[in-house]
Length: 452
Image 1: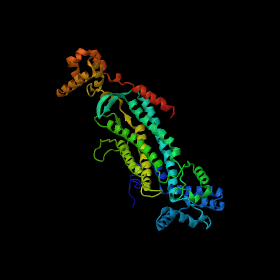
Image 2: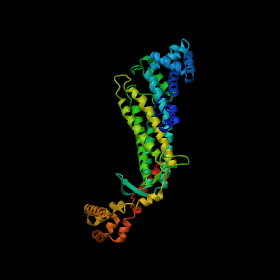
Image 3: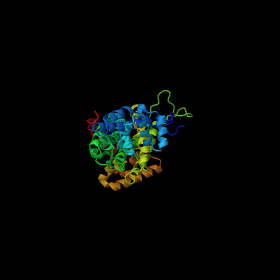
Image 4: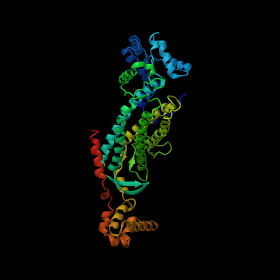
C-alpha cells in the first residue's frame, strides 16, 4: 500500500512533476550513492591509496543497474543501517580484495550528504529552467501591458490606479532576484562531503586534502574548507531561496485568484473543451490552478520550519535533526516543480480581460482618485484639511447612497476650490499612474539584458 500525494498515481501530478520525481526517486538516490563510492575509489586508485585493480572493479560493479532492490532492502534491514546494508550488498558482488576497499575512509554522512547534493544539483537546473521561462513570459506581458491602467488595490479595496504592466513587473523583478540568487549560491551549496566519522579526515591519512580535492572535482562539486556534517546552512539557505520563490508565486496566484472572482472578472483560467469545473454546477469555472499555486506555496513554506530545525545537530554527528532535511528538501523541490508548472500554464493560457479592467476603473464612482483630489485641494487648504473635507464628503455620500463623484460635484466647498473642468481631469484614472510606466520599462530593460 502506498500513501502520500507523491506516491498516489491519482494525485502525484497535482503536487509534483514527473521530471522532478525522477530526481528524488529510489533509483536515482541509489545511483548517486554509487556515483560517490565509485568516484572515491577512482581517485584513491589513481593516487595509489588502494590497488588500481580494486578501484577499477568498484567502478565497474558499484552501479545502480547492478542493484536488485529487494536484496538490497533485505540486507539493509538485517544491518539495521541502510548504508551498512548498501556496502555489504556490494561487497558480496565484488572480489574479496576489492570488497575491502569500497567505502574506504568514508562515513555514512559523507555518502548521503554528497549524494543529496548531486540530486539537488539536478533539481536545481530544472528549477532554474522553469523559473527562467516564467521570467521571460512575465517580461513579455509586462511590456505588452505597460500602459494598461487598472485598479490598484490596498487591503482588498480600490486604492489608486496602477498599470497591469507595473503589477507584473513587480513580480518579475522579485523572481529575477531569486533566479540570480540561486545561481550565485551554486558553489556554496553544491559542495562535496568527505570528512570521515567526526570530520577530521583521519581515516584518509596524509593524502586527505589531495583526495578530497580530486574527489570533489571528479563529482563536479566544490571542495569544502572544513567539515560541514553538523553545519546545515548550505541546504537551509537553498531551501530558504526556494521558499521565497514559492512565496512570490503564491502571491501571484492569490492575486490572479482574486481577479478571477465573478464580481471582479479581470482574469480567467483557460477552460478548453472537455475541462470541467464542477460535478454539480455545469456553469462553474473555478480558478483551480490559482488555488494550487497558493496551496503549494503554503506547503513549501511549512517545510522551512523543518529545515531551520535541522541545524540543531549535536557535537560532531547525529541523525536527530539531520533527518529533517531528508524529508523537507525533496518535498520542497517536488512541490515547487508543480507550482512552477501551474504558473507557466496560467501565464501562457490565462486571459486578462482588458475591457473589464477598464470598466472597473469607474465602478467606485471616483473613489479611486480620492488621493489625487486630496493633494490638489491640499495645495490650497493644506493636505490634512483636504483629507478631512473628502472624508466628510464620502461619509455623507454613503449615507445618502450617492457616488463619491456625484457628492464631490455637488459640494460647495469643492466648487469653490476647483472648476468642473479641473475635476474632470482629476477624475481621469489614466492620467494618475505616477512612475508606473517608467519603472516598468526600467525593469524590462534591465532584465531583458539578462534574459534575452
